[in-house]
Image 1 (cartoon, helix red, strand yellow):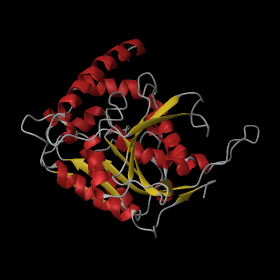
Image 2 (cartoon, helix red, strand yellow):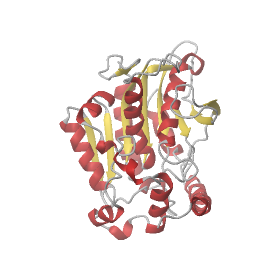
Image 3 (cartoon, one colour):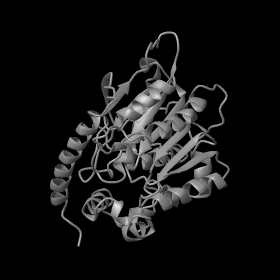
Image 4 (cartoon, helix red, strand yellow):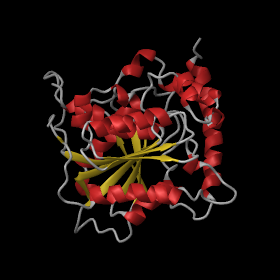
Length: 344
């Protein structure tokens, strides 16, 4: 029997508090992660992804020597983790620092809405709204909408794939003439960096745990049960490609994802390792250029855990490899990636 939504909200509130304490301790480790430069917000609903009126926040981290008047910068749009239920847009500040230090990009983290208050597909819709907002306001922010990369961790890594899938689906279908929408802005997603993603909700948690090399190293059932019940109250949605990118058709994956510059990093001891690896191989077989790596003896969210002895030494090399992909994608003028405008 599923838990009532009010109980899920109470549980989520408690875990959010505990998680914020953990990230506070993590931020004390040397080197200290940077703070964001500014926060902006906009109201959702312009492009009919969700009901209008929600104020969605974007956290901006700017490269040194920013000169938006004389040039346009590529942008890395990031989605934090937390099982679609926990976390915040400031959780990935160490990743932001790596991006700023190794690329020319502006880094933007999305404060998407969380379950159980906002279950599937609202988080995906917020991600789509964020992409389109940046593209539509590129002059104001000094960004190049033809050089957008999506990155994410865990649940956010899922969004790094499901957002382009939903964008492609939305602009590839006819819109009702009785409900005209603003002309969508042109944009181009040229890279996806996905750290330990959830890619298939069709697989039960029991099966995922059984596939793990070290089941005892995974998140406890009380937490994963909260995630699943909060984000996916209607089990019929597990087969949606906007929940499970592994459920997308081959044609959809070919058309919606970049042709190259995809990085997918899995943790060896994670219950999501098997599905992430399988998905990486599948999109590679579809002709995509994918860098896939399994991080030895790593648990889910290894790069976010507070460690008394300092930052996990595996973080730097993995982040650097991902930044090499980003730099190649964002700092190159001639790119093979699908452009999206009016279903193109």
